[in-house]
Image (cartoon, rainbow, N blue to C red; front, top):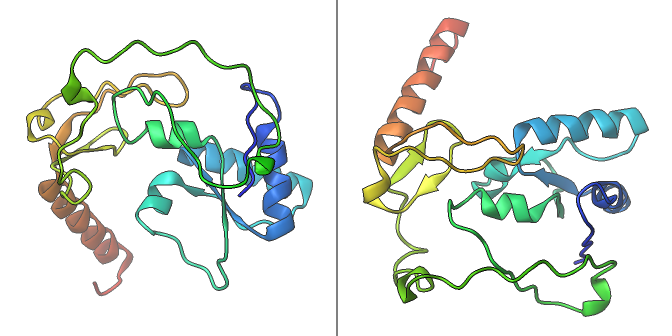
Length: 190
């Protein structure tokens, strides 16, 4: 895995497009708008790269294609941050440090957490199903206490999400009913 670390507007995406073109890798973007922007750039440059997908589609394996062998993730920090309303203060990567192409200056250290519980997720955190889903940005929450609350997550463009967390099961049921209604309108037999 190759890692490129540069400041915003420093050419990371240009390098990522080159990686993707060399390897015919699917590009994963933090948002649908960003995936559309990259697709336009790919077409403008005439690159042989599959159409980019969103982080949400990647995480939930909602992509299709014969011969998918690799992915290149654009703005992985924004992708990961979209999964929680709490600050991500650091990450680790396994691999050969020679894969890191460029470094940005180290950011200022993050403030220490206010309590030990902020550091330690519950033991079943990764196995638990989502309790709720934001109606605005689609982010999941694993806390029942957040269902019915405003999301307030800062989005990649800098705007604040105005969606509300709703029960995940109810959200899935409503999406299914919506998909059935759309199919009936089109004349498909769901």
